[in-house]
Image (cartoon, rainbow, N blue to C red; front, top):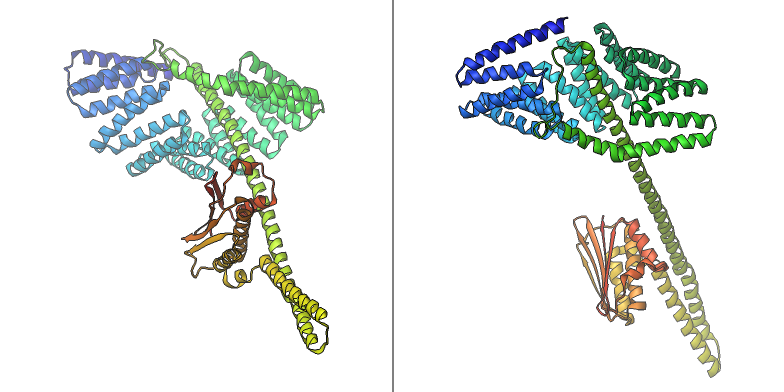
Length: 633
């Protein structure tokens, strides 16, 4: 009755204002009358709201009345926002911001930024929404409007939750709850408590989540707000499901089912039935579970609730898997997957396009009419519940997309771990190889080398004490020469196994000695350059690895390239080290390396991977080959 009297009063006020408009001059007073009439139409007829706001805007522009242009833009922007035409609403809210900035109207700036953020949130651009909401909060904090601030903080909570930043979501959710309590505004408080509870649920802090939901439930019951009560009961059931308290889940789902049936909410009734079926499934009462899920499925099917239909098929699949009926389980699982694919690839995308097209009121003949004066409270409740159902669909879609992204990240992490294990194995092999080379080189030099030198010394002493024929003398001399050659060859092998210069003087000197040895052998002319390494100590394992890479590359050059000269350059700039080996040989097709299974090239690749470096090889026929390795020390 109170609602009807209020609407009658608004009709009388509009009639009175329209009489005043017809008698008034085209001035600022007429602008204010049009804006007041537009405001009175806001909850009754959006078309009339837009019409009178545009009349106010036209007069304001003709008489250059800035405050009128600003307030007209605010009203027009709100109509477009309500219709879901967010691009147009952003355009008018930006006009508000420009004019409010000139008049230093901080409250209007903050509210316009808030509304733009709301638009980005509803269109799925959460990062832009967060940016605008935080700008709005900063301005409104200074302005001190606690009612708007509570709404802003509540929306920022949801935005951070949508992008999985729950610590920030909880921070703003607590602020919204605190401000709603200070304002003693139960409607704001229920929303803030519900959103904060969802944040704690996502962080698996179930007891905190339940405490907040029970508080919200108590307020909803005090207000007699049945739609909110049903929604909160289902949210409590969701927490109980996560906790594994299936008995309590069933009880709360049944309470929600009772309320939703009382309200005639088929979509919510379907969700309640599915929750009850899940509780029986977990208690292994399969017969009861099938009764409830089949009832939920029938409602979803008859009302074409495709997302809920897919969810029911998932539960049916789980029930039959639990009963060890693998054929039926697979059948329902495949049907649910096919349905979700259809929804996300076609219906979701096409539905959004159709939804936006439907609500572009300026370009379409269709009108969006809000509740007329004669509508009863039941129709108001139904409208709110339709919006809630649409929001629920969007949340389910977002949850599905987030699940897919998490799976992708997990696969990427597995790949990274496999690479890491491969590098660890490579490191172990190379360290073991170098340790073994060092040991063998030491044994050759200190053990076998010492023995051979001792034998040579003994033979030399024996020569002075023996009387030999000329033939024996010549044979003895040949034996001494062969022994000298053996000692030199042993030392060469020991040096190649682990160069003494590398251990004592470092990479730069060891590579210089190696290049000089090649020059002296006459096999290849090598020009060696070392830049930026003076006084810098490189880790021993890194030095050995780089030495082996250069050694392998020059050996390949001498064996295969038919080169006359080569360049080896080691350069250090800041923490970046680069090694370049170039030759003037015959070159080759680098694509052959992909099919090359040779140990030498495989060793080079493994060593570069171990150093976490980059390997680049270029080669042109008859012009030579260039290999460059870059790494961070």
